[in-house]
Each structure stands twice: as C-alpha cells, then as structure tokens.
Amino acid sequence: MKNRVLTLIILVVCALPLLAEVPDPAAFDKKVGAALLDGIARVFHEMAVSPSGSKEDRQKQIEDYLVSSMGEARKAKEQKQIDAVFFARYQRLLGIIKLMMAPDPGGILTPVIDQEVKRFVAEVLGEEFKGTGSGAIGQVANSIADEMVNLRLYMDNVEIKAKLRKEFDEKFNDLVPDKKK
Image 1 (cartoon, helix red, strand yellow):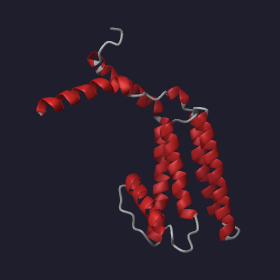
Image 2 (cartoon, one colour; image 1 turned 30 degrees about the vertical axis):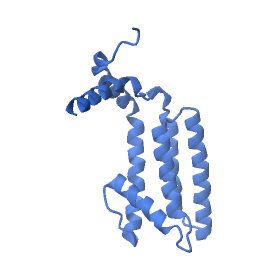
Image 3 (cartoon, one colour; image 1 turned 60 degrees about the horizontal axis):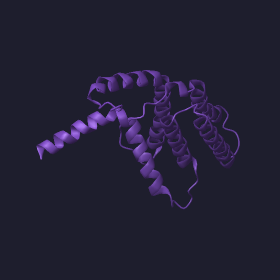
C-alpha cells in the first residue's frame, strides 16, 4: 500500500508541469482590471456622498451598475484583458453586492443570502459572520473592501506569480519524461 501511495505521489509531481496551465501575464490588462474595481468604489462613494432619491431609486442605480459592470467584465474576459481568476472573483464580488442590496420582503431568500455571505466573510476576513444588526453590515462592507484590495493585489502581482510558477515548474523538469521519444 505504501508503494502505491508513493508511486501516485511521484506521478502527480511529474505530471504537474505537463498538466498545469500557467497563466499568461501578458494577457492581463491592469488598466481594465483597475477600472472595474474603481467602478465599484466610485458608485458607493457617490451614494454615500449624495444619498438622494428614494430607496428604490438607489437600488435601481446599483442594479444598473451591477449589470453594466458584469457586461464590461465579460467583454474584458473575452478579449483576454482579464484572466479567469480575476473574472470569477469579480463576479462573486458583484454577486455578494447584489445579494445584499436586493429586496427580499418575504424573507424567502434569507437562508441562501446568509449562507453565501457567511462563506464570503469567512473566506475574505477569516471571521464568523455575525448575521444580523449593524455589526453584520459593517462586516460585509469590510469583506467587500478587503476583497477589492485582494483583487488589486492579485492583479498587480500576475507577472510575479507567473515567474514564480515557471521557476517551480523548472525545478521538476528533470522528472518529466521526454516527449520526443
């Protein structure tokens, strides 16, 4: 049994450089990623500075922003201006904002919303979601802000990550069987 496990581990280590797809840092346009992130901050800043209009008007403004931002992100991904990791995390960020802003008068979606927000807060802040009250709203706001910072750090370090990944893969190149034979 130990031999099988050891053999499996060796095969996995040898196959990693062959199977793994290293992201192309040249395909990431930092200006596009920054614009997507800055858009979120700008909308909430504008709403905080001038909270005019009814609650419904503000919800409509946020909904319109989320839809247009998701469209811009999809377009950027298709044009390879952002990568799949950035896109998925950005999409999740917009989804959390939508869940928090969407009206749920009957409380039908509350368990689903709480579950997703709980997971988001735990993954981003490493904290247990408080669930209700003003502390919970602050916790979600902090999670959103931290995830925006995390996305910015990810975006700023795409080249460094690719370089480190290449160095890691090169360490195991001598273990990879020659493809030409």
